[in-house]
Image (tube, rainbow, N blue to C red):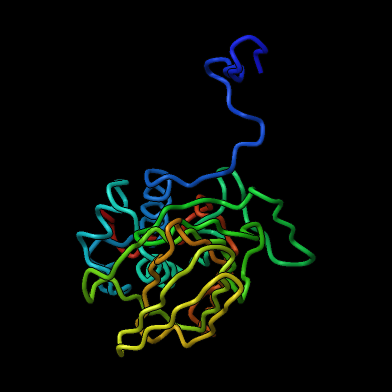
Length: 233
């Protein structure tokens, strides 16, 4: 810090902070999604049919124009036989089969801003995990309509680190959680998280994949593709 002005020295142009947190921007995620689709030789329509995600949503996501919510990226992951680690691994990182403890240092999870939650994915170097741990900042402030409710195979756990949230279910039930509270539920029930505290709430979340739906990521997204069934668009 400059003792005369009280200002911190500015970093040199063209340099990055040494401890910059890895992040997955929409463009990188979109390219990864397109590469995985083309490995199967699928058109947008074929992937839409297999995943249940609309053609428009997939197209916009591949072009980096749209952030996906949890339901959509897990549905695409199942269709493309990619687990969460292959989908959200940091740039240049190839997930490997879990054969020992996996440590994620503070601030080193891979960040992706979804529709209602900014995710920090943890343990992304281990492929084929049965659980997907995240630290999430809930930036949704209200429920806009039925499209806000997410449902996906498996079970889900949430623990509030700071702030307060409401978890809304599509059956009309609402659970309010404060710091230190937790919730465990069947994630096949439509649900949505909302921050209700002055500052955005932060949670630790854990989801499990339904057996047989999420294959181990034996290949990284840029690995050699299986033989295409037909030419992709």
